[in-house]
Length: 437
Image (tube, rainbow, N blue to C red; front, side, top):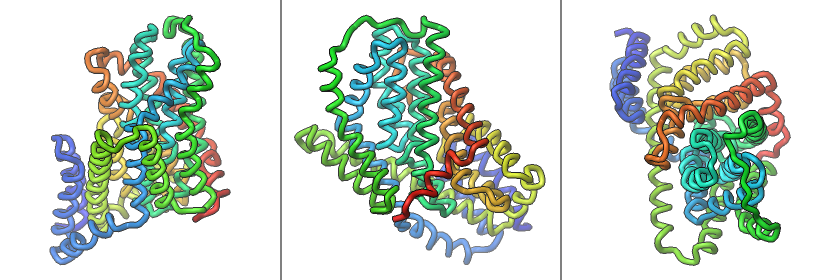
């Protein structure tokens, strides 16, 4: 069989396997192996199986990924996140819609030490949703704000999504992480403004709270969240100033989170082992997906499918703006059916060569892609944050509540997406000013 034909048949087979529920790492890896065997023979295939998995996990820059995962897990286990929401709640509760704002600000701050959209969504569902129900807030908009704000972890560094993109496209992890700062802040501001306008238009979404919090209580609460800001400065400051590379920044952040957890918990038993197990499980799943995706990518290159697709796509989208719009539509549609890591690993082998061919700034494209990932995690019917929130609220809300509540936040994200496409400098300015470590 002609190698190009093998490549196209493999792509069709991949989507069939994903549609019937085969785990994405298994589907991509097996299709990649079989495709390479049929197209170029057993010697090349065996050589790739011997070298590629080890080369992937042995990549020094990938050490940042489990470190960022561990930092977020340790911070959540130590209770820092609970204090973060409690503090935001105390300062904002008296404002109409203040709990929505507290969720948005708290999620943005936690995203700076988490890196996982799912962890963000689950943690704030457990912490914030009972409070919002207690004070009579709209169930649907409460869930929507938690699911939407949870997506900040994809953009605000440390971002696991950005690390995966950087590894797959051979870009600077440090520059990508720093590039997410301004778009992440912009997204939070748009969310805050959007919720404010929603509550002004429909006051019933957020009843006025008469329960007061004294100023001494507010200041005392603020004193409990200083570890978050230290971790943020440790990671961001180290990367931006060039004091250490992202991998070392991840290790420093994880160690800092460990120290703060010990100080807060005053013991090691009961929380450390489960936290380490969670971090290891999440990291291993991501590594398996990466290995499977790279095997698939290698197969698509050697069969010649990539070259043909580049020519086909550039014939339709022959300018950077046209391509960005086309890619945005593609990812929004795929986000309805695929989880974020799988979607990125499956599609980047096809699209990134076009980015190179059109001379699009890879940092800009990466940030736009991450914004599309943020949209996909809250897009029905398969938005992973929606399921994470539903799993956490149990029978207290229906899927109808979730879909209704998340719709405004999808619109807010689309506004930010338009800004990012129209003004690439929002993504590219800050990385150009940093000092590489």
